[in-house]
Image 1 (cartoon, one colour):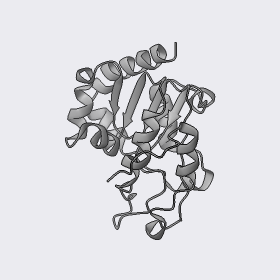
Image 2: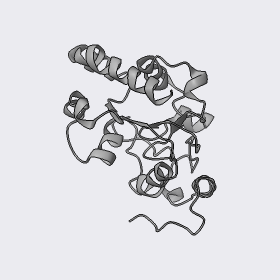
Image 3: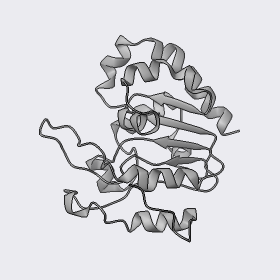
Image 4: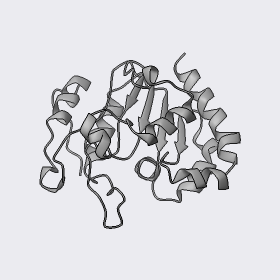
Length: 198
């Protein structure tokens, strides 16, 4: 259950508290290292899942091959992508959660998004567009449902939210099987970002 807002419920206070968070320390294999970027002027919020090992080590969100693919989808260079005056980046889990037995990353810690993501979003009043990147972001904001169907029905969410698959290497085959993603959704995504940044 999320905690009640503190008396000092400002974005600056939320950042300080999130960076100091040790709530999941006992179960994080590499220890806590919250990775996010926020600002009171951000127009676009990118919600992902949780940092991987490379992001954990560098402290830079989307600083991996998945980030490269996401920036290609957006037609956005690294300078703008990492300019927190315009772009906020908050995963559903702020810290690296570890790995599953099958070798994939573990899911984001369930207590994290209600505690931090929702608070950050509420404290960024200039947001015009939210990108939901991957199944965990989709589930947190939209509830349960199949990822492909959620993304395919992107027009139903209106202009302020765009659902996306996670841009990992596994998405290469998915994009081939779903050509509508590149033909229909990506042009809307790029237009929506441009409008939000005007």
